[in-house]
Image (tube, rainbow, N blue to C red; front, side, top):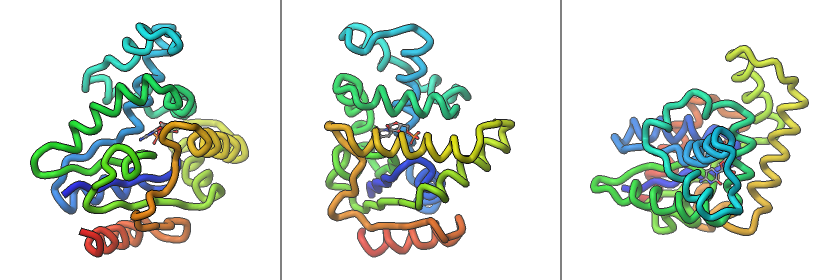
Length: 205
Ligand code: C5P
């Protein structure tokens, strides 16, 4: 079984996808980490994505990179949303994601374009959303727990900027697949969201 989970930043899609992976015993790929890894390569190596050789170098990283704690930083997420609009980057990462999805026994992937571009024939598709205010509240609490000092307004402004970039780009924009089930987590606990997600997957498979 292949499950596609898409949605904007801090919608709860990662938490839900991880819980579904556990529930169904499927390997899980957080595809946002791939774009974050590219952003980190660009920053650390001073690469210019307009140069083809640099774009290739930026997308050339091994799985060990995926555990770099810097990938979780909010400014890396913001950079990721800029580099992810680049056609060469999307093309390079597409193969990697398709390979992951094609493994025997199935897989679950979360991101922005999983149900629309990466695995349009997934057995189950979820589109997870929550209001910008609630997503900002969650992200702010997360940041504070990690010692961050950004204000709630700043976090909300960043979320809105990222939404606009991810939804407005010409290639693989963030958009709900017509055959995806919508899961609004704005007023649901994590447990209730996961329960609902399992029910929505069961109804589709
Ligand atoms: O999900 P996460 O916040 O880690 O993603 C970081 C950025 O990577 C997103 O804002 C988006 O621009 C990009 N991304 C994407 N396609 C995906 C996953 C992430 O364009 N499938």
